[in-house]
Image 1 (cartoon, helix red, strand yellow):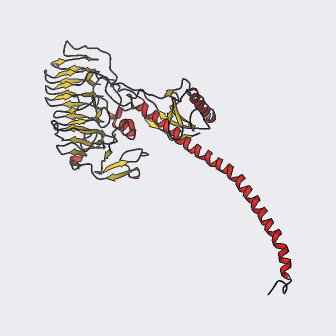
Image 2 (image 1 turned 45 degrees about the vertical axis):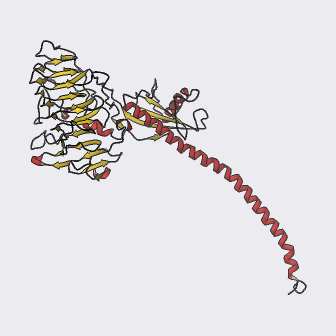
Length: 476
């Protein structure tokens, strides 16, 4: 049908053009609104990204401070504020930012630079807090500032010097007169009973000495108030595991586990996972009611840190003339373990070496930590740096070996007397050796003509376990 034959076409032609123009105007207005809305949205997105990146940078700065505090060899320690932060949250944030701004120098040299921004840690020792402050994109521009706060409990560091090869909190017995202390000396906070043949270094006792060459009545030496759990608490810190060795829990139920970082205790089902045994040499037994993990191979266990929870360790490795293993051994006992029968005190917490092991410490400077006793039945050698062998109660050495680069320490304090507020082991009021009652040995004793050759140069590399508890992150 033609236009002439249908008059309605004339009306539609008159409406189409205004409609099209109106639609174009609406679209133009909407486009303008979209553009106007998109710009603040982009700005808001950028601000949100900066805030999240800032949190990561601030957290990284605080974590680096924690690692530095835990490592006494770390020379680049975090900045410690001369005053304490206010208790008010907003005022504390301003306090941290002000201290961070004071550290802005040319080139931001005092800041930890990351891909997301620059961060710096501010330590409030009095309150036990570490503030991580982040400037995004960098400490000079500072278009965004974020603050993270981390609480921690602090204990002073007890330094361990290489000038003493044997240090005991109670009495020490020398059953043979030819035991020689070649590198480093010997000190007892109790009595030295017996006469070693040669001591090349400090030779003293706070009590009495059997040998006239020994200085009696000497000042007591500080002995760290360690227990195995102190080391478990810091198992995830990079400073104590620079080689990224696995940390295995050898559990009292015969399983081997690894714990999540959030775990509050070892071997808990909800926060740990059962894993295959590390190496074919580990065997678990409960003979006579005593829980024991035994390494049965001549070769050392695979590199790692091994934590026997509520169990003993017996290490039968016999590689003294071969290649070294990189291992550290820990044995934890609880008061329940040390009061249960049979054999109260022998069911957990002790470490025994039965053959001729040679090892590097996986945990820097820490080879052995036992909540109860350490027994050396053959020669024990530590490659590398001076290495700590620590017994919370006593140690005994029963072989004519050469004990190289070993720092032997006996706290002579039962796990019953452990107090987290004590930095050093305190003597019993009676002056007697303390143990759990029924533990494998009751006195620190060297029964053979052994030679002790601890290095006398430098200090033992023993981590500062001053961070005894770490709280949750708090963002400002």
